[in-house]
Image (cartoon, rainbow, N blue to C red):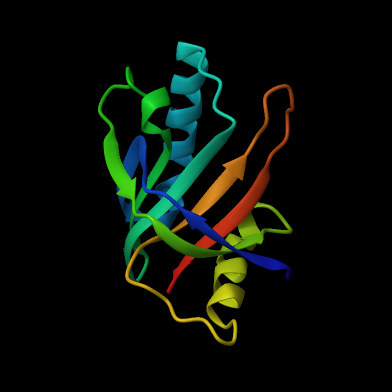
Length: 139
C-alpha cells in the first residue's frame, strides 16, 4: 500500500451523524447524497468521519465541507483539526476500508496523535465513479 503524509489546515465538515451500529452507516450516505442532489450541489469530495467507536457502536458523520452544506437540515458539524495525516488509497472499495485503516496503523515509525480518522471520497465533477482514501492522524 502506497502512503503519503499530508499536512492540512483545519476545515469544517457538515453532514448527517450516526451514533449507533456500523450497519447504519450506508443509510447516512443515502441521506447525504439525496440532499446533495436535491440542492444541486457540486461537491468534488465528501468525508466519512469516525469521531468515536466502542465495540460495534460508532459516532460517524457522512458529510461535505460546511460551506457547501449551508442549507442542509438537521446536520452535525465538526472541525477537522490542522495537522499531519498518513494517507493511503483504498483498493477494493468500501468493504476494504477497515483493512486499509488497520494496515496504516501498523506502519513503522509513525506516532498517532489524538484526533479522529476519516475516509475521503474523491468524485471530480463530470465523473460517475469515485476514489476512496483513508486518513490517519499522526504526529
